[in-house]
Length: 467
Image (cartoon, rainbow, N blue to C red; front, side, top):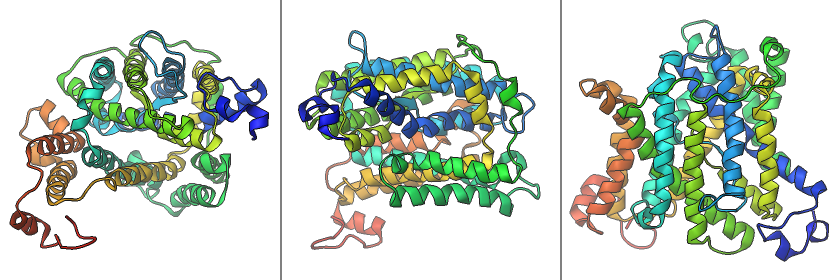
């Protein structure tokens, strides 16, 4: 792909530039392929946690949620690329379903079936509106969310989800206690996904490397099909076209859901700020403007609120597509608009969701092991930007210990009211709140003696020491 084929270097850096249609359409589809698996996976996980979908009598709710995940990822992307009023960065930002909210959503719906969905979508709607309001102040609150806090939170999100990946690879929660759970066949299917994904990620180039997880899932799917683990019955029963229904699952506003989604909105907003900055630096060689950052935050929140109305999960900007822009060198927002329209079309065709539902849970397990591991790696990468002073070590240690500990041992808070218990045992919210508060109130340097006691004397001296 040369400048001569697409335009001059200056045009390629211009968000308003439209490449020739013959190039723009493949580039737009490429953006969809890079995010497709990550976009629909949260819907499958939430339905699985609720007991709807895999092994259930009626998988219609899961099919609908998959469908809405595609449709409203496309709608939210249009909010970013086309925009209206102050909403939208008018940049090539791809929106999709966020993993960050899963540790909040899973406890809300765990084992409760579709009866839990009204409170879930009420929380998503309220949290989305709150997220949009952050656009008015995002520039002034970034000081409270340095890499120490955001890196810790992203790492905690990944750690909270790795158990899900292992359970899926072994055969899924419904299979626990059976001989099939953790069988060699299940792990062969999941292992195929992991091995193919890693091979393509590190030894392939171009789109094969970018879409490594998708190709890995296809390879695992073929192995599962050969083992007789795939059924296409639901594809034949699915309708050709279905329109979204406002609050089709009902709506209920509960304190636990609203507080949880509003607090996680801070994390999602900071992630979007980072993605906007990454796009403008990598694609246009400049810093993002205040208007672009505010517009992106407005679109992020509004996209989530609209998604909640129609049965989709919270949206956020997708970081993998930031890397794709840097790789292709094409900054055109119109290219991403084409990808968004493709997502919308897929979201209106239930047979697409039904085809996705044929993927065995073991195949999905192999994919999410990689994806959730990458979430942890992304958090650790953010933490690499932290100056590991004695003060920061203590903040990280206390927040991680309490957050992860409460997540691993939820019975420790069994006497709390239900709302407080759900929020606290998510692990993410207590870790984030502890880190934010300690970062704001602790002095820049703690006493050396106190630090050496906490760190076991690891605070050394000289170059390379933890200072």
